[in-house]
Image 1: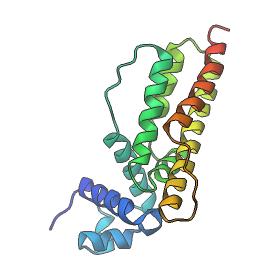
Image 2: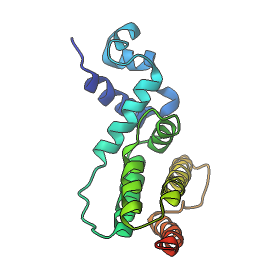
Image 3: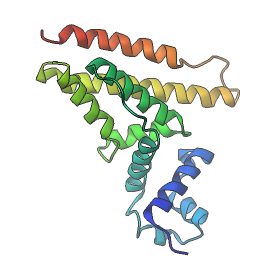
Length: 184
């Protein structure tokens, strides 16, 4: 049977979601697809490239229509979409954060945030800092939330993770600071 890159990525996401990142190896993926590991290298040259493609696909699957017109509401939409996309898959946050951090993929949310901050009139020297601050909030909150959800489901902790309300409050605090710098 002949596979396409999209088949490999789709199966990788299924393995990720079912078994977790620690079990997503090229060998495991090849076994899931019924091919030799060497056959995967025709589609992805290494695991880092595979993880970048998985991260991009997680974000693609999480896309929603953007309706906000005001810059700060656009920021909220992008951040909420990013959080929800990462939470949709087991270890999705770790995969997306890793791909972004290493510059391997998952760049679209950062580009969207930069555009919104520029459109909002944030001074050029603060656009990148503001974008990173927003991404740090989303990434950090989501990684912790995902870990807590997994730990709670395994009975390892008995506290509820900070959910959407906690995330939204934190995001508004960062936005308040960014709004204070607009035109200033």
